[in-house]
Length: 266
Image (cartoon, rainbow, N blue to C red; front, side, top):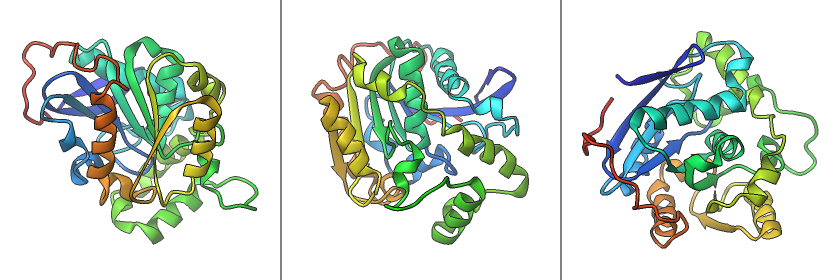
C-alpha cells in the first residue's frame, strides 16, 4: 500500500484513473473512501488520475496526538508530497470541509502547484464557525463534534476508536487556523471555485465571500455530508463541467507520468 512520509508521519494515498491529476481531500471524521463510496471520484476517472488521500489522523494514515503535526503548513505539505510521489507538478485540487481548509493552505503555501482549486462546504472567513446557528456563542469542542456525529451519522464515524480520538481532537483544533487564508483566496491568480450543498448552513457565508470578491460559486443538492455521499455525482459533474470549460485552466495539458494506469492502486 502506498504511503508518503512527511516530517515523521505516514500518509496513505491511492490513485484511480489515468491522465492529468485531480486530488480529492475529504472532511473531518471521514476518509478518502468517501469519494469512492458516493461515486464522486468516478466522474473524473475516465481521463484523469484521481489521488485519494487519507488526512493525518484519519483512515489508514498515522494518528499522532501531537497538535503540531496537524498545523495547516504540515497538512498542505503532505498533499504536495503525494503529488511529488506521483510525479505531477500541478493538480486540480478539490477539497470538502477540512479538505477545503487544507486546499486553502496549499494556495497560501505553494499556489504554483495548483492548476485549479475547488473549495466545498467551508467558509474562508469563519471556518468551522460558519456551521453554527444564529445566536450560538463560544466554540464547538471536539467531544461535542464527535457526540453529534455519533448521534446523527453513526455509520460515518463507526471507525473511530478511543485510541484515535487524541489525533482527531488535534486535527479538529487545528481548523481554527485561518490567518491569511481569506486574503490569499481573494487575491489568488489560479482558477478558484466555491461549492456547497443547498442544505448546508455554511453556504450563505460562502456566497457572501464569493460575491464580495467576484468568485464563482455553485450549489448542488444535499447537506454538508450528503454532497459527498448520496448527491456526490451531481456535485462532481458540476465541478467537472467547470474544469472542462476552463475554470481549471489547461487541465488537460499536463502529461500522465510514465507507467500510470487506470486501475485503483492501494
